[in-house]
Image (cartoon, rainbow over all chains, first blue to last red; front, side):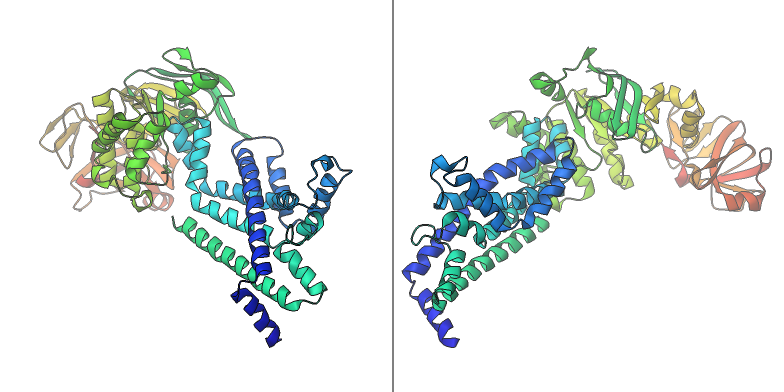
Amino acid sequence: MADLFAEALRRIAVLDREVVEITVRTLAISACATLVSCAVFVPAAAAVHFRRFWGKNLLIGVVQTMYSLPTVLIGLLVYLLLSRSGPLGGLGLLFTPEAIVIGQALLIAPVIMGLSIATLQGVGPGVRDTALGLGASHLRADLAVILQARHAWATVVLMAFGRAVSEVGVAMMVGGNIRGYTRTLTTAISLGVGRGDNAEAVALGIMLLVVALAVTVLATAAGRLSRGA
Amino acid sequence: MELELAGVHHRYGDNQSLRGLDLRVAGGEVHAVMGPTGCGKTTALRLAGLLARPAAGEVRFDGRPVPAKGRARLGARRRTAMVHQEPALLRGTVRHNVAWGLRARGVRGAELAARTDAALARLQLADLAHRNHDQLSGGERKRTALAAALAVQPEILLLDEPLSSTHPALRQRLREHITAINRDLGVTILVATHDIQDALALAGALTVMDQGVAVQAGPVDEVLHQPRCAFVAEFAGGANLLRVDHSDGAVCRVGGLAIQAPAPLAPGSFLSIPPGHVLIGLTEPVTSARNRFQGTITAMRPFDYGFLVTVACAGTPIAAVVTRGSVDELGLVPGRDVWLYFKVSAVRSLG
């Protein structure tokens, strides 16, 4: 066991090409997925929060229950969409990094929407009332509320990124775990164990742990800033 | 600018907050809306500031209905500014907050700086301009919110309980600021309050509300001295508002009474004695209280935590709040002769 860890740490220390490449690709894919999902679902969350409509509370409840949506379920959905016979099959995206980005973006959508709504609720109605009372347009008043919670947004982004980077189901099903192309930390660990290359699996596992730890530390710091500010 | 709410109705969920409220505020006046908590004061202000829409009825500026939507409604809303009861400041410095409304209206450059500086100076906030919003006391927050509203130069200023939860010194200071804003800038002010003394100190006109409707409106003197219903009378009577006929130094003549006040009061001005500060005894008390009067109980009604006992002293009614226990112990009933006494410090000048 000690030899195994020693070999894993050696590979990290010498910046083993495979380990570095997979780590960088994983970070890039999950960062893209987080970016895409935030671009779509933060405004969606704002729309839900700021507008009144029938079934609003039900919708928020549904979103919150989807936090722990099984990753393979999203993987299956995206696979069916992107497969040759699926509605988006013509785009030829299956087994590409873009497919993983789409899948992860959908996977973390409930997290982003739910936490965004909670963040906006945390600001309270006073800020929007103040802004409107000073002559702001509704859009500008909404923006004032969004900006009021700026540190909390870092927590939302980091939590979503953390969920994306540590998932395996989507990356495996729609990425295909293709070496040098769609292989990510989680799929590579799975493969490494399967083919008996435990040292690589442990090295990649340590890298995943470091990423997850960094995300947790940053999210905690952002949360503290948010509460203290 | 003249403001009018004509027969407005409003509902929050199942709660009907306004039921055909009529309210008219003349241009340049300070108009108080007074009534108990939950009577619809804040909703009336929100409708006046176009922050909410009435379910029925009409909001009019200068006699014309305000636009229902679009840029025209935003333009109408920008003729007003509202300061909420618990002002939520935006993240940033006092200066950022005061300038915020101007920026939202597209004011930039030298004009932005000049108008921000003027508002900061008027509310005596220049020294705090660079202090962060979360480092301010309650009073500083209220003044910052008031300065921000003032900076946008509204034609009508809507103030929701601006003096609530403030200590006496700050209360007096804020009263002076609000009065000066109206006097110096000619801004029409609609102020919601549940405190009759604030209404008296600030406003020339008064609308008393109860359960979403106006029960009486008019000049403050008229409303308080010629109440048209028991509800208004209770508000007026609950404050012991007395008009000073003439004064000899700090001794004020009110009807047949000589009331000692902390300072001389001008003839025609009002003084107030909070009923909670008035004590009742069966014999002439030996006490340090300088104001002692004999009279006869003319009315008793449940009030707050006990009874509001009204005693006619030389023809002038003065009310005292007495607990149920004391009423029983002293055997207080209408027609009984009693002594009233209160300290000089209980006498408040209302200008």
